[in-house]
Length: 282
Image (cartoon, one colour):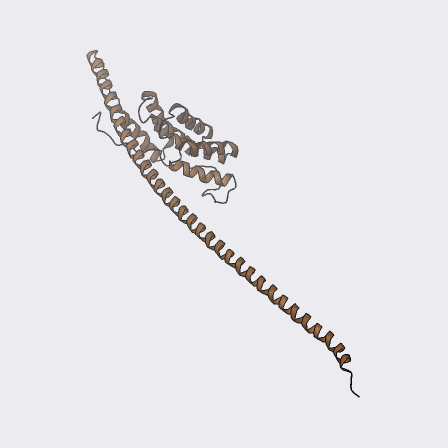
């Protein structure tokens, strides 16, 4: 039996319509994919440009940071050199001032001797200030602290205004500290700070007083002294030690070289170089 042509056409039209719809959807999907791909490529391009710009900025910042670090290093080196020159100049000034003290006191002692000779009184010339100071320092280095105390105190009684008077006062504190006379040591270091504020012995007096207070458990007072030392004398080696103690007492990460609870029992290194005998008074 033959199927009517019209009937076949009726069945074919829906099928063809479905194929056309499917093809259109596929074309639409392809177009969407192309658009998405184009958008993605554009975004990737922008991201690449952004990454390139970011890298350039980072390189520029690193270059600037390197330049800043180099300049800071140069400044630090210059400051260290200047500090060294200042220390050398201070040492030379101390030596010259010591010689002037010796000459001044030597002339005064000789005049006194002449007067007493004219009056018929025999007298023994007093030693020059530098020889007197060296005598006390010699007793200190031999750990004869009681004798050092006596000599340095006599020195200050006779020569309270000489160049080495602050050092004599400082070693009175060190001698008391070696003898475990804590209160007397604190008073002696206080005298250095108050009576000779411009002396090179002041930073060492600050440091020793801070160590004593720390050993005595007076942490807040020790911190105040260390902080004052670090601020007033930033280029002195005592300030570096004070900074270490501050970091330890405040609980910073950098460990300190000495425990905070251990009291100081040994004298510190001398605050100024040992004076040389100028030859005056011979």
